[in-house]
Length: 61
Image (cartoon, rainbow, N blue to C red):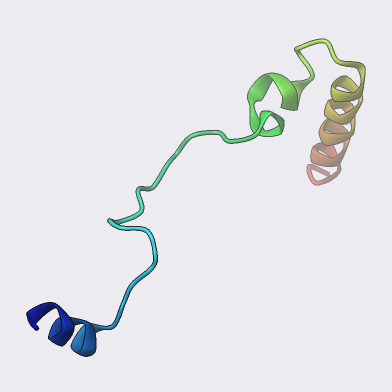
């Protein structure tokens, strides 16, 4: 009867238990430094790095 009473008062929580932890990890390859600078050798990444550099230099006028 005590469990039933607590369910009536608090409701049922189907979510994840515990608190969420803040992760400061890089989750995608696109955010890693080698991919941003194009250093890993991929042609498309090197081209994207070139465009990022051009865009960054536009703001420095």
